[in-house]
Amino acid sequence: MFRLAGTLTLVLLCAGIIDSQTPKPPLFVVIFSLGPNWDADKPADQQRGFREHSANLQRLRTGQSAVLGGRYSDKGMVIIQAADEAAARGMFSGDEMVRAGVFRMELYPFAPFYTGCIN
Image (cartoon, rainbow, N blue to C red):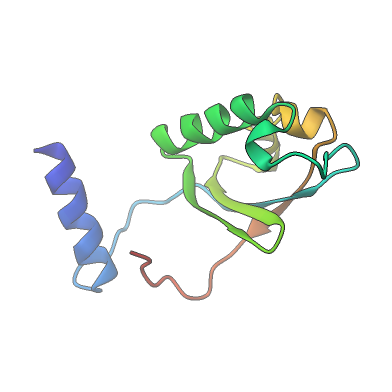
């Protein structure tokens, strides 16, 4: 029941039928690029720390901190909600792929000027 209500609310928000007055946490974009310890002879799922990295992203999705994610070129991007930049960085402080230099991570405040819907 709650999932249906949430889906309906999202559809109505996307259609512009209702407007959310609830303040939302700030958004940040996190960009992952290949680091100096990326092993070009191995696919992504065999890189050091891949399981832990994937588990962290899953945790962020389950906790609804991750708003959107995807890959482009040889980079990955995640848009997250967090109270502030320190909290956003904290979400990835234990990321084994970043700590091991397999990925480089950049984090920037994200201020959308178009709030359309992605299906």
